[in-house]
Image 1: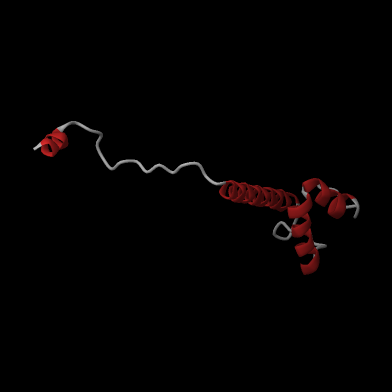
Image 2: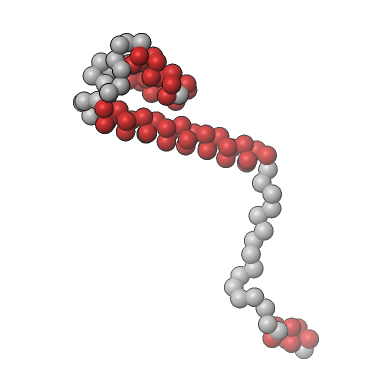
Length: 97
């Protein structure tokens, strides 16, 4: 009888919330790594868009062969836009327009 009365008492609607708890250090580090990866991809897309606006041939510099293109992408991912500009544009006498 007491249990039946408790069921009639007002309570919050819906399912009870699931408590996630505090994420482990390993999960936090994995998420930070994923954020860094996505930021690098976003920067690469930004550079590709800039190249597409300033360079002919579908946004790729005409002097890049397949190997140079792959190296260019790795350098950008690992070292950033300043390094890529110095290595591929300023040193080769090809300033950005």
